[in-house]
Length: 603
Image (cartoon, rainbow, N blue to C red; front, side, top):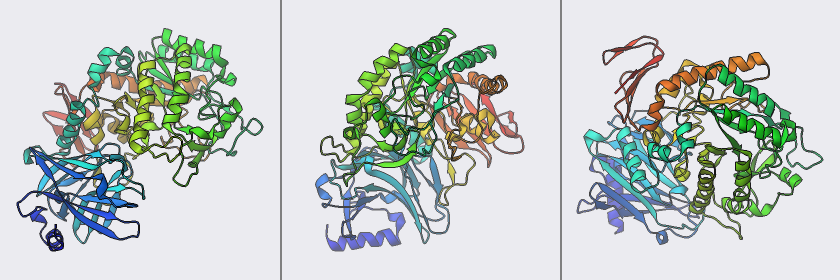
Protein backbone atom coordinates (compact mmCIF):
# COMPACT_ATOMS: atom_id res chain seq x y z
CA UNK A 1 0.00 0.00 0.00
CA UNK A 2 1.39 3.44 -0.96
CA UNK A 3 2.19 6.30 1.38
CA UNK A 4 -0.48 8.37 -0.40
CA UNK A 5 -3.02 5.64 0.40
CA UNK A 6 -2.01 5.62 4.08
CA UNK A 7 -2.39 9.38 4.32
CA UNK A 8 -5.75 9.26 2.62
CA UNK A 9 -6.90 6.55 4.99
CA UNK A 10 -5.83 8.57 8.01
CA UNK A 11 -7.89 11.48 6.68
CA UNK A 12 -10.92 9.21 6.46
CA UNK A 13 -10.51 8.24 10.11
CA UNK A 14 -10.37 11.84 11.27
CA UNK A 15 -13.04 13.38 9.11
CA UNK A 16 -15.57 10.77 8.07
CA UNK A 17 -16.16 8.06 10.67
CA UNK A 18 -19.37 7.02 9.00
CA UNK A 19 -17.41 5.74 6.02
CA UNK A 20 -15.43 3.19 8.04
CA UNK A 21 -12.16 1.66 6.88
CA UNK A 22 -12.19 0.00 3.44
CA UNK A 23 -9.94 -0.31 0.44
CA UNK A 24 -10.84 0.92 -3.03
CA UNK A 25 -12.90 -2.24 -3.59
CA UNK A 26 -14.91 -1.78 -0.40
CA UNK A 27 -13.20 -4.59 1.51
CA UNK A 28 -12.81 -3.84 5.23
CA UNK A 29 -9.40 -3.03 6.67
CA UNK A 30 -7.93 -2.61 10.13
CA UNK A 31 -5.09 -0.40 11.30
CA UNK A 32 -2.10 -1.68 13.24
CA UNK A 33 0.11 0.80 15.08
CA UNK A 34 3.42 -0.69 16.15
CA UNK A 35 5.42 1.07 18.84
CA UNK A 36 9.09 0.49 18.18
CA UNK A 37 11.93 0.17 20.66
CA UNK A 38 13.17 3.69 19.85
CA UNK A 39 9.77 5.21 20.69
CA UNK A 40 8.60 5.76 17.11
CA UNK A 41 5.26 4.49 15.83
CA UNK A 42 4.84 2.56 12.61
CA UNK A 43 1.35 2.33 11.07
CA UNK A 44 0.25 -0.47 8.77
CA UNK A 45 -3.06 -1.32 7.13
CA UNK A 46 -4.27 -4.93 7.02
CA UNK A 47 -7.19 -6.22 4.95
CA UNK A 48 -9.71 -8.30 6.84
CA UNK A 49 -10.44 -11.70 5.33
CA UNK A 50 -14.22 -11.95 5.01
CA UNK A 51 -15.94 -15.33 5.14
CA UNK A 52 -19.66 -15.13 5.76
CA UNK A 53 -20.23 -13.02 8.86
CA UNK A 54 -16.62 -13.31 10.08
CA UNK A 55 -13.94 -10.71 9.40
CA UNK A 56 -10.50 -12.07 10.31
CA UNK A 57 -7.42 -9.98 10.96
CA UNK A 58 -4.05 -11.73 10.70
CA UNK A 59 -0.73 -10.03 11.34
CA UNK A 60 1.99 -12.52 10.48
CA UNK A 61 4.50 -13.03 13.25
CA UNK A 62 7.30 -11.85 10.97
CA UNK A 63 5.64 -8.49 10.31
CA UNK A 64 6.48 -7.08 13.72
CA UNK A 65 9.95 -5.52 13.91
CA UNK A 66 12.43 -6.90 16.38
CA UNK A 67 12.21 -5.35 19.84
CA UNK A 68 8.74 -3.85 19.33
CA UNK A 69 7.11 -2.64 22.53
CA UNK A 70 3.43 -2.96 21.59
CA UNK A 71 0.97 -3.38 18.74
CA UNK A 72 -2.40 -1.57 18.68
CA UNK A 73 -5.16 -2.93 16.45
CA UNK A 74 -8.11 -0.72 15.50
CA UNK A 75 -11.24 -2.08 13.80
CA UNK A 76 -13.16 0.55 11.79
CA UNK A 77 -16.44 -0.01 13.61
CA UNK A 78 -14.85 0.56 17.01
CA UNK A 79 -14.53 4.32 16.42
CA UNK A 80 -17.42 6.63 17.33
CA UNK A 81 -18.36 10.25 17.86
CA UNK A 82 -19.74 11.32 21.22
CA UNK A 83 -23.51 11.19 21.08
CA UNK A 84 -23.75 8.35 18.59
CA UNK A 85 -25.84 5.27 19.34
CA UNK A 86 -24.15 2.12 20.56
CA UNK A 87 -21.83 0.81 23.25
CA UNK A 88 -18.73 -1.22 24.03
CA UNK A 89 -18.47 -4.09 26.48
CA UNK A 90 -15.19 -5.50 27.78
CA UNK A 91 -14.52 -9.02 29.08
CA UNK A 92 -14.43 -7.84 32.70
CA UNK A 93 -18.05 -6.66 32.40
CA UNK A 94 -17.31 -2.96 32.03
CA UNK A 95 -19.75 -1.32 29.61
CA UNK A 96 -19.65 2.19 28.18
CA UNK A 97 -21.78 4.17 25.75
CA UNK A 98 -20.62 6.91 23.41
CA UNK A 99 -21.39 9.69 25.86
CA UNK A 100 -20.11 13.25 25.63
CA UNK A 101 -17.56 13.27 28.44
CA UNK A 102 -14.21 14.88 29.26
CA UNK A 103 -11.22 13.24 27.62
CA UNK A 104 -10.10 10.08 29.32
CA UNK A 105 -8.77 6.54 29.09
CA UNK A 106 -9.78 3.15 30.40
CA UNK A 107 -7.51 0.11 30.21
CA UNK A 108 -8.84 -3.33 31.01
CA UNK A 109 -6.07 -5.03 32.93
CA UNK A 110 -8.12 -8.16 33.63
CA UNK A 111 -8.60 -10.03 30.38
CA UNK A 112 -10.97 -12.52 31.95
CA UNK A 113 -12.12 -13.69 28.51
CA UNK A 114 -10.60 -13.43 25.05
CA UNK A 115 -13.50 -11.43 23.67
CA UNK A 116 -15.15 -8.00 23.68
CA UNK A 117 -17.99 -6.31 21.84
CA UNK A 118 -18.60 -3.00 20.07
CA UNK A 119 -21.65 -1.44 18.44
CA UNK A 120 -21.66 1.82 16.48
CA UNK A 121 -23.84 3.11 13.61
CA UNK A 122 -21.32 1.46 11.27
CA UNK A 123 -21.90 -2.02 12.61
CA UNK A 124 -21.76 -4.39 15.57
CA UNK A 125 -19.15 -7.03 16.22
CA UNK A 126 -18.15 -9.56 18.82
CA UNK A 127 -14.37 -9.79 18.62
CA UNK A 128 -12.57 -13.03 19.52
CA UNK A 129 -8.82 -12.94 20.06
CA UNK A 130 -7.20 -16.16 18.87
CA UNK A 131 -3.50 -15.40 18.29
CA UNK A 132 -1.06 -13.75 20.74
CA UNK A 133 -4.21 -13.20 22.81
CA UNK A 134 -2.49 -13.59 26.17
CA UNK A 135 -0.41 -10.48 25.45
CA UNK A 136 -3.55 -8.45 24.65
CA UNK A 137 -5.66 -6.02 26.62
CA UNK A 138 -8.55 -3.80 25.56
CA UNK A 139 -8.47 -0.03 25.86
CA UNK A 140 -11.07 2.69 25.46
CA UNK A 141 -10.03 6.29 24.83
CA UNK A 142 -11.92 9.53 24.37
CA UNK A 143 -10.24 12.53 22.73
CA UNK A 144 -12.10 15.68 21.69
CA UNK A 145 -15.36 13.85 21.20
CA UNK A 146 -13.86 10.83 19.42
CA UNK A 147 -14.13 7.42 21.07
CA UNK A 148 -11.87 4.50 20.20
CA UNK A 149 -11.92 0.94 21.48
CA UNK A 150 -8.94 -1.14 20.45
CA UNK A 151 -6.67 -4.04 21.33
CA UNK A 152 -3.13 -3.45 22.53
CA UNK A 153 -0.63 -6.31 22.51
CA UNK A 154 2.07 -5.71 25.12
CA UNK A 155 5.29 -7.25 23.77
CA UNK A 156 7.87 -5.41 25.88
CA UNK A 157 10.55 -6.20 23.34
CA UNK A 158 9.89 -9.96 23.25
CA UNK A 159 9.68 -11.75 19.94
CA UNK A 160 6.11 -12.83 19.08
CA UNK A 161 5.68 -16.61 19.14
CA UNK A 162 2.63 -16.86 16.82
CA UNK A 163 0.58 -14.76 14.42
CA UNK A 164 -1.60 -12.00 15.85
CA UNK A 165 -5.17 -12.92 15.05
CA UNK A 166 -8.65 -11.53 15.79
CA UNK A 167 -11.96 -12.80 14.46
CA UNK A 168 -14.58 -10.06 14.26
CA UNK A 169 -17.99 -11.76 14.23
CA UNK A 170 -20.52 -9.45 12.56
CA UNK A 171 -23.91 -9.18 14.28
CA UNK A 172 -27.14 -8.09 12.56
CA UNK A 173 -28.80 -4.95 14.01
CA UNK A 174 -31.70 -6.92 15.47
CA UNK A 175 -29.34 -9.22 17.41
CA UNK A 176 -26.58 -6.94 18.64
CA UNK A 177 -27.02 -6.59 22.40
CA UNK A 178 -24.18 -7.44 24.75
CA UNK A 179 -26.06 -10.65 25.55
CA UNK A 180 -25.96 -11.49 21.84
CA UNK A 181 -22.23 -10.79 21.80
CA UNK A 182 -21.72 -13.04 24.81
CA UNK A 183 -23.70 -15.81 23.07
CA UNK A 184 -21.34 -15.59 20.09
CA UNK A 185 -18.36 -16.32 22.33
CA UNK A 186 -20.20 -19.02 24.26
CA UNK A 187 -21.10 -20.77 21.00
CA UNK A 188 -17.51 -20.43 19.81
CA UNK A 189 -16.17 -22.03 23.00
CA UNK A 190 -18.72 -24.84 22.83
CA UNK A 191 -18.21 -25.51 19.12
CA UNK A 192 -14.45 -25.96 19.44
CA UNK A 193 -14.82 -28.19 22.49
CA UNK A 194 -13.10 -25.82 24.88
CA UNK A 195 -16.07 -26.10 27.25
CA UNK A 196 -19.04 -28.39 27.79
CA UNK A 197 -22.38 -27.61 29.44
CA UNK A 198 -22.47 -28.03 33.22
CA UNK A 199 -25.55 -30.21 32.80
CA UNK A 200 -23.58 -32.74 30.73
CA UNK A 201 -20.55 -32.78 33.00
CA UNK A 202 -22.65 -33.08 36.14
CA UNK A 203 -24.34 -36.15 34.69
CA UNK A 204 -20.90 -37.79 34.47
CA UNK A 205 -19.40 -36.61 37.76
CA UNK A 206 -21.37 -37.00 41.01
CA UNK A 207 -19.05 -34.56 42.80
CA UNK A 208 -19.96 -31.83 40.34
CA UNK A 209 -23.67 -32.68 40.46
CA UNK A 210 -23.54 -32.34 44.26
CA UNK A 211 -21.68 -29.02 44.13
CA UNK A 212 -24.27 -27.59 41.73
CA UNK A 213 -26.92 -27.88 44.43
CA UNK A 214 -24.73 -26.87 47.38
CA UNK A 215 -23.26 -23.58 48.62
CA UNK A 216 -19.49 -23.34 48.92
CA UNK A 217 -18.41 -22.97 52.56
CA UNK A 218 -14.76 -22.24 53.20
CA UNK A 219 -13.31 -22.55 56.69
CA UNK A 220 -9.99 -20.85 57.41
CA UNK A 221 -8.43 -22.95 60.15
CA UNK A 222 -5.06 -21.35 60.84
CA UNK A 223 -2.68 -18.71 59.54
CA UNK A 224 0.49 -16.83 60.30
CA UNK A 225 0.48 -12.99 60.28
CA UNK A 226 -0.30 -11.38 56.91
CA UNK A 227 1.60 -9.35 55.78
CA UNK A 228 4.41 -11.31 57.34
CA UNK A 229 6.75 -9.52 59.75
CA UNK A 230 9.40 -12.04 58.66
CA UNK A 231 9.82 -11.89 54.86
CA UNK A 232 12.31 -14.77 54.56
CA UNK A 233 11.39 -17.51 57.03
CA UNK A 234 13.27 -20.51 58.38
CA UNK A 235 12.95 -22.91 61.31
CA UNK A 236 14.37 -20.35 63.72
CA UNK A 237 12.33 -17.27 62.82
CA UNK A 238 9.00 -18.65 61.51
CA UNK A 239 6.13 -16.69 63.13
CA UNK A 240 3.61 -18.55 65.26
CA UNK A 241 0.42 -19.70 63.58
CA UNK A 242 -2.92 -18.42 64.83
CA UNK A 243 -5.34 -21.31 65.36
CA UNK A 244 -8.94 -20.28 64.67
CA UNK A 245 -10.64 -23.62 63.99
CA UNK A 246 -9.28 -27.01 65.02
CA UNK A 247 -10.46 -30.18 63.31
CA UNK A 248 -12.54 -30.91 66.42
CA UNK A 249 -14.13 -27.48 66.16
CA UNK A 250 -14.83 -28.03 62.47
CA UNK A 251 -16.85 -31.11 63.39
CA UNK A 252 -19.00 -28.89 65.61
CA UNK A 253 -19.61 -26.70 62.53
CA UNK A 254 -20.87 -29.84 60.78
CA UNK A 255 -23.15 -30.56 63.75
CA UNK A 256 -24.60 -27.07 63.60
CA UNK A 257 -25.23 -27.36 59.86
CA UNK A 258 -27.21 -30.55 60.49
CA UNK A 259 -29.08 -29.04 63.44
CA UNK A 260 -30.19 -26.03 61.40
CA UNK A 261 -31.28 -28.13 58.43
CA UNK A 262 -28.66 -27.32 55.81
CA UNK A 263 -28.94 -30.38 53.63
CA UNK A 264 -26.03 -29.82 51.25
CA UNK A 265 -22.78 -27.91 51.45
CA UNK A 266 -19.30 -28.28 50.02
CA UNK A 267 -16.76 -27.49 52.72
CA UNK A 268 -13.29 -26.34 51.73
CA UNK A 269 -10.66 -26.44 54.48
CA UNK A 270 -8.20 -23.56 54.18
CA UNK A 271 -4.94 -23.59 56.11
CA UNK A 272 -5.15 -27.27 57.13
CA UNK A 273 -1.57 -27.72 55.95
CA UNK A 274 1.63 -27.18 57.89
CA UNK A 275 2.02 -23.49 58.74
CA UNK A 276 -1.61 -22.71 57.93
CA UNK A 277 -2.94 -20.66 55.03
CA UNK A 278 -0.07 -19.97 52.58
CA UNK A 279 2.27 -21.05 55.33
CA UNK A 280 5.07 -22.93 53.56
CA UNK A 281 4.04 -23.62 49.96
CA UNK A 282 4.89 -25.80 48.12
CA UNK A 283 5.25 -27.77 51.36
CA UNK A 284 1.85 -28.87 52.63
CA UNK A 285 2.63 -31.98 54.69
CA UNK A 286 2.59 -32.90 57.47
CA UNK A 287 -0.93 -31.89 58.47
CA UNK A 288 -0.46 -29.23 61.13
CA UNK A 289 -0.49 -30.77 64.62
CA UNK A 290 -1.73 -27.53 66.14
CA UNK A 291 -5.04 -28.15 64.36
CA UNK A 292 -5.21 -31.77 65.51
CA UNK A 293 -2.87 -33.61 63.18
CA UNK A 294 -3.48 -36.14 60.42
CA UNK A 295 -5.61 -38.67 62.29
CA UNK A 296 -7.98 -35.98 63.51
CA UNK A 297 -8.19 -34.52 59.99
CA UNK A 298 -9.12 -37.93 58.64
CA UNK A 299 -11.80 -38.15 61.30
CA UNK A 300 -13.14 -34.70 60.43
CA UNK A 301 -13.29 -35.47 56.69
CA UNK A 302 -15.11 -38.74 57.30
CA UNK A 303 -17.47 -37.03 59.76
CA UNK A 304 -18.49 -34.38 57.22
CA UNK A 305 -19.08 -37.04 54.57
CA UNK A 306 -21.07 -39.27 56.92
CA UNK A 307 -23.35 -36.31 57.56
CA UNK A 308 -23.97 -35.84 53.84
CA UNK A 309 -21.50 -33.06 53.03
CA UNK A 310 -18.80 -32.83 50.40
CA UNK A 311 -15.36 -31.76 51.59
CA UNK A 312 -12.24 -30.56 49.78
CA UNK A 313 -9.14 -28.60 50.65
CA UNK A 314 -7.33 -25.44 49.58
CA UNK A 315 -3.97 -25.67 47.83
CA UNK A 316 -1.60 -23.39 45.92
CA UNK A 317 0.92 -24.15 43.17
CA UNK A 318 1.18 -20.56 41.95
CA UNK A 319 3.30 -19.22 44.80
CA UNK A 320 6.25 -20.47 46.83
CA UNK A 321 7.87 -19.36 50.07
CA UNK A 322 11.38 -19.74 51.39
CA UNK A 323 9.74 -21.14 54.54
CA UNK A 324 9.39 -24.41 52.59
CA UNK A 325 13.09 -24.97 53.30
CA UNK A 326 11.93 -26.14 56.75
CA UNK A 327 10.54 -29.22 55.02
CA UNK A 328 13.38 -29.46 52.51
CA UNK A 329 11.28 -28.34 49.52
CA UNK A 330 12.71 -24.90 48.73
CA UNK A 331 14.37 -24.81 45.32
CA UNK A 332 14.91 -21.75 43.15
CA UNK A 333 14.79 -24.11 40.18
CA UNK A 334 10.98 -24.13 40.16
CA UNK A 335 10.58 -20.36 40.37
CA UNK A 336 9.35 -18.23 37.49
CA UNK A 337 12.23 -16.16 36.15
CA UNK A 338 11.83 -12.53 35.03
CA UNK A 339 13.45 -11.06 31.94
CA UNK A 340 16.34 -9.65 33.97
CA UNK A 341 17.04 -13.07 35.48
CA UNK A 342 15.56 -12.27 38.90
CA UNK A 343 12.60 -13.89 40.64
CA UNK A 344 9.28 -12.11 41.02
CA UNK A 345 8.30 -11.49 44.64
CA UNK A 346 5.65 -8.80 44.62
CA UNK A 347 4.07 -9.14 48.07
CA UNK A 348 4.30 -10.98 51.38
CA UNK A 349 1.82 -13.50 52.72
CA UNK A 350 1.80 -15.95 55.60
CA UNK A 351 4.96 -17.68 54.44
CA UNK A 352 6.83 -14.41 53.87
CA UNK A 353 7.91 -13.11 50.48
CA UNK A 354 5.70 -14.68 47.83
CA UNK A 355 7.61 -15.97 44.79
CA UNK A 356 5.82 -16.77 41.53
CA UNK A 357 6.38 -20.29 40.23
CA UNK A 358 6.68 -21.91 36.81
CA UNK A 359 3.66 -24.21 36.22
CA UNK A 360 5.69 -26.69 34.15
CA UNK A 361 8.13 -27.21 37.00
CA UNK A 362 5.32 -27.38 39.56
CA UNK A 363 3.37 -29.95 37.53
CA UNK A 364 6.38 -32.19 37.15
CA UNK A 365 7.38 -32.01 40.82
CA UNK A 366 4.36 -31.76 43.10
CA UNK A 367 0.71 -32.60 42.22
CA UNK A 368 1.49 -36.13 41.10
CA UNK A 369 2.90 -36.66 44.61
CA UNK A 370 0.46 -34.51 46.60
CA UNK A 371 -2.83 -35.55 45.03
CA UNK A 372 -2.67 -39.27 45.93
CA UNK A 373 -1.90 -38.30 49.55
CA UNK A 374 -4.85 -35.89 49.63
CA UNK A 375 -7.15 -38.52 48.15
CA UNK A 376 -5.96 -40.95 50.79
CA UNK A 377 -6.98 -38.46 53.49
CA UNK A 378 -10.49 -38.65 52.03
CA UNK A 379 -10.93 -35.34 50.22
CA UNK A 380 -13.31 -35.52 47.27
CA UNK A 381 -15.11 -32.78 45.32
CA UNK A 382 -14.16 -29.57 43.51
CA UNK A 383 -10.54 -29.46 44.63
CA UNK A 384 -9.43 -25.84 45.08
CA UNK A 385 -6.11 -24.55 43.75
CA UNK A 386 -5.60 -20.88 44.49
CA UNK A 387 -4.71 -17.94 42.22
CA UNK A 388 -4.44 -19.55 38.77
CA UNK A 389 -7.75 -18.46 37.26
CA UNK A 390 -7.59 -14.91 38.61
CA UNK A 391 -4.36 -13.78 36.90
CA UNK A 392 -3.21 -13.50 33.31
CA UNK A 393 -0.77 -16.15 32.08
CA UNK A 394 2.83 -15.18 32.73
CA UNK A 395 6.13 -15.53 30.88
CA UNK A 396 9.01 -17.53 32.35
CA UNK A 397 12.44 -16.47 31.04
CA UNK A 398 14.37 -19.31 32.67
CA UNK A 399 17.10 -20.77 30.51
CA UNK A 400 16.19 -24.25 31.79
CA UNK A 401 12.38 -24.11 31.66
CA UNK A 402 11.31 -21.13 29.53
CA UNK A 403 7.60 -20.62 28.88
CA UNK A 404 5.71 -18.13 26.79
CA UNK A 405 2.23 -17.26 27.96
CA UNK A 406 0.49 -19.87 25.83
CA UNK A 407 2.80 -22.52 27.26
CA UNK A 408 2.10 -21.18 30.76
CA UNK A 409 -1.60 -21.74 30.07
CA UNK A 410 -0.89 -25.28 28.82
CA UNK A 411 0.91 -26.37 31.99
CA UNK A 412 -1.62 -24.69 34.25
CA UNK A 413 -4.29 -26.73 32.50
CA UNK A 414 -2.30 -29.90 33.06
CA UNK A 415 -2.53 -29.26 36.80
CA UNK A 416 -6.24 -28.42 36.54
CA UNK A 417 -6.94 -31.57 34.53
CA UNK A 418 -5.12 -33.75 37.05
CA UNK A 419 -7.15 -32.10 39.83
CA UNK A 420 -10.40 -32.94 38.06
CA UNK A 421 -9.35 -36.54 37.43
CA UNK A 422 -8.07 -37.01 40.98
CA UNK A 423 -10.89 -35.48 43.00
CA UNK A 424 -13.88 -35.13 40.70
CA UNK A 425 -13.55 -31.43 40.04
CA UNK A 426 -11.43 -28.30 39.91
CA UNK A 427 -12.09 -24.88 41.44
CA UNK A 428 -9.92 -21.79 41.52
CA UNK A 429 -10.01 -18.16 42.51
CA UNK A 430 -11.33 -16.41 39.39
CA UNK A 431 -12.87 -16.91 35.99
CA UNK A 432 -9.99 -16.26 33.58
CA UNK A 433 -10.79 -18.49 30.68
CA UNK A 434 -7.33 -19.68 29.76
CA UNK A 435 -8.06 -22.53 32.20
CA UNK A 436 -11.84 -22.63 31.67
CA UNK A 437 -11.65 -26.05 30.01
CA UNK A 438 -11.33 -27.77 33.38
CA UNK A 439 -12.79 -25.13 35.72
CA UNK A 440 -15.98 -26.05 37.59
CA UNK A 441 -16.27 -23.17 40.07
CA UNK A 442 -14.84 -19.65 40.26
CA UNK A 443 -14.56 -18.28 43.80
CA UNK A 444 -15.35 -14.83 42.41
CA UNK A 445 -15.32 -13.49 38.87
CA UNK A 446 -14.76 -9.81 39.72
CA UNK A 447 -13.08 -7.71 42.37
CA UNK A 448 -15.38 -4.82 41.44
CA UNK A 449 -17.46 -3.89 44.50
CA UNK A 450 -21.14 -3.74 43.52
CA UNK A 451 -21.67 -0.28 45.04
CA UNK A 452 -18.32 1.37 44.29
CA UNK A 453 -17.88 4.20 41.80
CA UNK A 454 -17.01 3.17 38.26
CA UNK A 455 -14.18 4.63 36.15
CA UNK A 456 -15.25 7.82 34.30
CA UNK A 457 -15.57 6.23 30.84
CA UNK A 458 -17.58 3.27 32.17
CA UNK A 459 -21.35 3.55 32.50
CA UNK A 460 -22.15 0.32 34.31
CA UNK A 461 -20.97 -3.19 35.10
CA UNK A 462 -22.89 -6.05 33.46
CA UNK A 463 -22.77 -9.86 33.88
CA UNK A 464 -20.85 -10.37 30.64
CA UNK A 465 -18.86 -13.32 32.02
CA UNK A 466 -22.06 -14.94 33.28
CA UNK A 467 -23.79 -14.43 29.93
CA UNK A 468 -20.97 -16.49 28.42
CA UNK A 469 -20.30 -19.10 31.10
CA UNK A 470 -23.32 -19.46 33.39
CA UNK A 471 -24.56 -23.02 32.88
CA UNK A 472 -20.97 -24.03 32.06
CA UNK A 473 -18.96 -22.89 35.10
CA UNK A 474 -20.45 -22.02 38.49
CA UNK A 475 -19.37 -18.80 40.14
CA UNK A 476 -19.71 -16.35 42.95
CA UNK A 477 -19.94 -13.02 41.07
CA UNK A 478 -17.95 -10.65 43.26
CA UNK A 479 -15.41 -10.92 46.06
CA UNK A 480 -17.81 -8.72 48.00
CA UNK A 481 -20.74 -11.13 47.61
CA UNK A 482 -18.86 -13.58 49.84
CA UNK A 483 -21.01 -13.94 52.99
CA UNK A 484 -23.67 -11.98 51.11
CA UNK A 485 -26.45 -12.56 53.66
CA UNK A 486 -24.49 -10.47 56.16
CA UNK A 487 -24.14 -7.56 53.76
CA UNK A 488 -26.21 -4.89 52.07
CA UNK A 489 -29.36 -5.51 50.04
CA UNK A 490 -27.37 -4.48 46.98
CA UNK A 491 -24.94 -7.35 47.56
CA UNK A 492 -27.83 -9.76 47.93
CA UNK A 493 -29.46 -8.53 44.71
CA UNK A 494 -26.18 -8.73 42.77
CA UNK A 495 -25.83 -12.34 43.90
CA UNK A 496 -29.27 -13.03 42.40
CA UNK A 497 -28.87 -10.87 39.27
CA UNK A 498 -25.54 -12.52 38.38
CA UNK A 499 -26.77 -16.07 39.09
CA UNK A 500 -24.24 -16.79 41.81
CA UNK A 501 -23.58 -20.03 43.62
CA UNK A 502 -23.51 -18.88 47.27
CA UNK A 503 -20.07 -18.61 48.83
CA UNK A 504 -19.57 -18.35 52.59
CA UNK A 505 -16.27 -18.03 54.40
CA UNK A 506 -15.50 -18.58 58.09
CA UNK A 507 -12.78 -16.06 58.94
CA UNK A 508 -12.66 -14.31 55.58
CA UNK A 509 -11.06 -11.43 57.52
CA UNK A 510 -7.57 -12.41 58.64
CA UNK A 511 -5.04 -9.86 57.38
CA UNK A 512 -3.38 -7.78 60.08
CA UNK A 513 -3.37 -4.64 57.91
CA UNK A 514 -7.18 -4.64 57.64
CA UNK A 515 -7.22 -5.12 53.87
CA UNK A 516 -10.30 -7.31 53.57
CA UNK A 517 -10.95 -7.79 49.87
CA UNK A 518 -13.97 -9.99 50.57
CA UNK A 519 -15.56 -7.29 52.73
CA UNK A 520 -15.74 -6.51 56.42
CA UNK A 521 -18.77 -8.65 57.33
CA UNK A 522 -17.56 -12.04 58.52
CA UNK A 523 -18.76 -15.33 59.95
CA UNK A 524 -16.90 -16.83 62.90
CA UNK A 525 -17.23 -19.71 65.34
CA UNK A 526 -15.12 -18.74 68.33
CA UNK A 527 -18.03 -19.35 70.69
CA UNK A 528 -21.12 -21.53 70.38
CA UNK A 529 -23.24 -18.40 70.06
CA UNK A 530 -21.08 -17.10 67.19
CA UNK A 531 -21.34 -20.50 65.55
CA UNK A 532 -25.15 -20.57 65.77
CA UNK A 533 -25.48 -17.04 64.42
CA UNK A 534 -23.04 -17.67 61.58
CA UNK A 535 -24.71 -20.89 60.47
CA UNK A 536 -28.09 -19.15 60.64
CA UNK A 537 -26.84 -16.62 58.04
CA UNK A 538 -25.59 -19.49 55.87
CA UNK A 539 -28.98 -21.21 56.24
CA UNK A 540 -30.65 -18.02 55.02
CA UNK A 541 -28.58 -18.14 51.83
CA UNK A 542 -29.04 -21.90 51.50
CA UNK A 543 -32.83 -21.58 51.60
CA UNK A 544 -32.77 -18.78 49.03
CA UNK A 545 -30.45 -20.76 46.76
CA UNK A 546 -32.57 -23.91 46.85
CA UNK A 547 -35.50 -22.03 45.31
CA UNK A 548 -33.57 -21.53 42.07
CA UNK A 549 -30.70 -24.01 42.22
CA UNK A 550 -31.98 -25.58 38.98
CA UNK A 551 -30.82 -22.43 37.16
CA UNK A 552 -27.18 -23.32 37.83
CA UNK A 553 -27.53 -25.81 34.97
CA UNK A 554 -29.04 -23.29 32.53
CA UNK A 555 -27.39 -20.74 30.28
CA UNK A 556 -28.00 -17.09 31.11
CA UNK A 557 -29.43 -15.93 27.80
CA UNK A 558 -30.47 -12.32 28.33
CA UNK A 559 -29.91 -9.33 30.57
CA UNK A 560 -31.91 -6.14 30.09
CA UNK A 561 -32.23 -2.87 31.96
CA UNK A 562 -35.95 -2.07 31.77
CA UNK A 563 -35.84 1.03 33.99
CA UNK A 564 -33.28 3.10 35.83
CA UNK A 565 -33.20 0.62 38.73
CA UNK A 566 -34.69 -2.61 37.38
CA UNK A 567 -32.95 -5.42 35.49
CA UNK A 568 -34.42 -8.60 34.02
CA UNK A 569 -32.32 -11.73 33.57
CA UNK A 570 -33.40 -14.57 31.29
CA UNK A 571 -32.36 -18.23 31.30
CA UNK A 572 -32.33 -21.00 28.75
CA UNK A 573 -35.31 -22.82 30.27
CA UNK A 574 -37.49 -19.71 29.93
CA UNK A 575 -37.14 -18.54 33.55
CA UNK A 576 -36.82 -14.82 34.16
CA UNK A 577 -35.82 -12.86 37.24
CA UNK A 578 -36.60 -9.16 37.74
CA UNK A 579 -34.29 -7.39 40.20
CA UNK A 580 -35.35 -4.02 41.63
CA UNK A 581 -32.63 -1.79 43.11
CA UNK A 582 -35.07 1.08 43.57
CA UNK A 583 -36.76 2.39 46.70
CA UNK A 584 -40.25 1.92 45.22
CA UNK A 585 -42.12 -1.18 44.00
CA UNK A 586 -42.05 -1.79 40.25
CA UNK A 587 -44.76 -3.33 38.07
CA UNK A 588 -43.37 -5.91 35.69
CA UNK A 589 -45.14 -8.42 33.48
CA UNK A 590 -48.24 -8.47 35.68
CA UNK A 591 -46.17 -8.80 38.86
CA UNK A 592 -45.05 -6.33 41.48
CA UNK A 593 -41.34 -6.37 42.25
CA UNK A 594 -40.92 -4.98 45.78
CA UNK A 595 -38.35 -2.29 46.48
CA UNK A 596 -34.83 -3.69 46.93
CA UNK A 597 -36.05 -7.17 46.09
CA UNK A 598 -36.61 -9.54 43.19
CA UNK A 599 -39.28 -11.73 41.61
CA UNK A 600 -38.76 -15.05 39.83
CA UNK A 601 -40.99 -15.87 36.87
CA UNK A 602 -41.02 -19.63 36.25
CA UNK A 603 -40.94 -20.91 32.65
